[in-house]
Amino acid sequence: MSYTGPTDLYIDGEWVAAESNETFTTEDPATEQAYADVAKAAEEDVDSAVSAASEAVDRDGEWRSLDPRERGERLRAMADAIEDRKEEIVRVESRDNGKTPFEATLDVDMVIDTFRYYAGWTDKIQGDEVPVPGNRLNYTVREPVGVTGHVIPWNYPFQLAGRSLAPALACGNTAVLKPSSTTPLSALYFAVAAEEAGLPDGVLNVVPGRGSTAGNRLTEHPDVDHIAFTGSTGVGKGVMERASQNVTGVTLELGGKGPNIVFPDADLEAAAAGCHYGIFMNAGQMCWAGSRLLVHESVHEEVVEQVVERAEGTPLGSGIDDGGRMGPTVSESQQQEVLDYIETGKAEGATVATGGGVPEDKDAGHFVEPTVLTDVTNDMTVAREEIFGPVLSVIEFADQEEAIEIANDSPYGLMAGIWTSDLNTAHGVAEYLDYGMVSINEYPVTQPQTPFGGFKQSGNGREQGTEAIHEYTQTKNVNVNLE
Image (cartoon, rainbow, N blue to C red):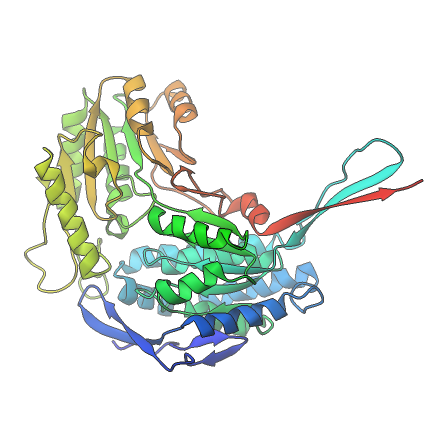
């Protein structure tokens, strides 16, 4: 089925070609066939989008000065518009990214929930009265930061765009959205939804383009007041460096090397199922993937056996044509990078318990077999670096202290999982894990109302929940001398 959705840039309420009239081609990673030609934004297009967003966020502008309840209604209308096109967006996301319709449906549902959640926040953003000495009135107000730039990765193109757009818009900001050039299509449906919901021109702008041009220009633009970036730690450091030239605030959600810690008293069947899902969903292309499986030595063999059995029983495919439950990696280069990591693991002493290569029954597509590596130690490359593919590294531990030490011995600190039937173990271990998110007896899990973000090189700031309101507003203090 050919793509018939939007392909132009969306700037200041209009669908326009790139200033240069250049386009780029995306492919379906399950078939390796060209899927769509998309307008390729360059620096001048980003400048136009930022200019439109700057005018729209003026203090007397229609969006910022809109009654908060009405702003909430517009966001609910955006959620409704997305829901009306749910099947279409799911199909586009599956074709453009390679994820199965099951996974794409979860993503679209999450965005709908997120917009409705933040629609409820629009009339609840408030400051405080501050008790100060003397005859004074002192209070704070929370104001929009202004123009927000959103640089979105290819692994969750629709969900991660919605995750940062919804709170930014709820707070009265305007936005310029730059999706990945690998998976640009679903982001354009936010513009469709914004039009139908009646957002004023310039409030939401979408500029697909290369990160080296459009992305860099957005993150270094002097008229952008806050950047939300999700992606690799290396690229995130570059974003922070460019933004720092204008002292622009940043929310960074970066890499991860999540450990799932399985204790002997855990429900081992549930743990195996959760650990399987936590690494093989979205073909392992997740910052919060549970890519390290830490198993107590007394149950190591049983847990590995169950995880291997589940991995070998996972149908591979796009899900659209062949009923697959794990799709391909997003590109040929990503596929090769994952395969190279597997070879590195083997060279350093890891054992391939299952998988380890390209499935023999696939004539096309960037597929990698669900892979389980055993005999892994935490100093190996496959245990240290983010593979971003369907590769699980299994590490044994002897006691709780060693499990915590191994889990924390990582440059990352995004999400960790604990599997146990003992409350003391669950809460005690959670306290000592250096991770921004800890999930007990399920993995991974998040909701619009729960903060999402990590420690160490997994980023700074938080998306979702109340914390996102703080990311997209700034505090003003007002002091009144009443004498």
